[in-house]
Image (cartoon, rainbow, N blue to C red; front, side, top):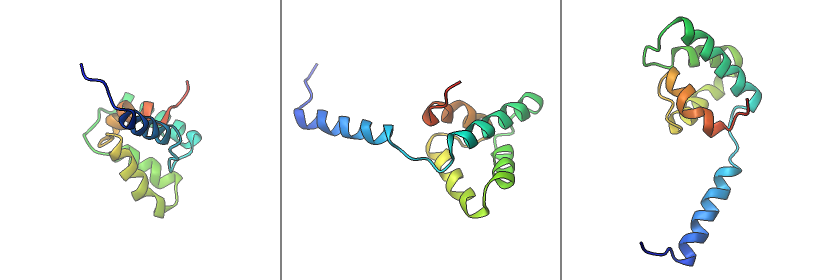
Length: 97
């Protein structure tokens, strides 16, 4: 197994630190509320492979001009439908239970 160079290690550390300090569009409070809403909706209705419930919550809780940016951020984390928002974005937002 090859050793990483000192420069590679520095670059990886810099990338990790940047990820730790990432500022998300939604506050942790809003993310918790979104996840609670999605859990409630998906417990009654199966995911239809869209962001139907996510978009519904965003429309009711955010200014219109932020919605597209939040959806893009969720997509970057692997949230392309309501169930994926829950499964893939939860750890990225680092929500404590």
